Length: 247
Image (cartoon, rainbow, N blue to C red):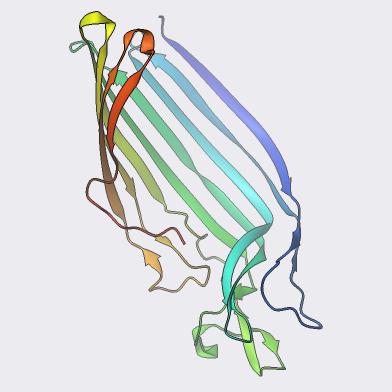
């Protein structure tokens, strides 16, 4: 194969219909509905095949603007029952750079190195109706949407805060090796490591509800039959037993 370079770009626009939360508070004057979500933006980048096809590399930059972003939130109703609600953040933006590369070493047939890295910025531009956390005081920021029946504020302004479960950095590196065996069989082995920087796990953006940065390691070994007609594989995921949360 010969070297080649491709430049690409795309503009996108999409919608997600609104509805209403099926759990939560149902009372006169309480609105459980949420609006349509709209996103528009685009991406541009480069796809490259270099070194006679031994190196494949991709780089892309993206930017997306959300209006009425639908955000899932856990809250307690007036009876103390945990319920899942959907709220609209007035506006949010997500932008970053995504890159990956795969290199087949010419000196060792069947050995391939791969890596990927993503830098991502994701923030609420406007989100004045974010949920307060239990026990949050006015001086702690719980000063929006006063509920006269309970004589307290029920929301906080988290405009400028990070989106939920949106780490700034993620990446992975890995090594794969394949070796032909007798009778047309193939031995395949691989190891990989993934990384994530810290991120919020609660829409309330409490400082003690953050998933710290972490690494996860995995490995596999497989035996494939002639023409990949069958395969037996042993896979080990999260070998370091790293416990993380996504909620």
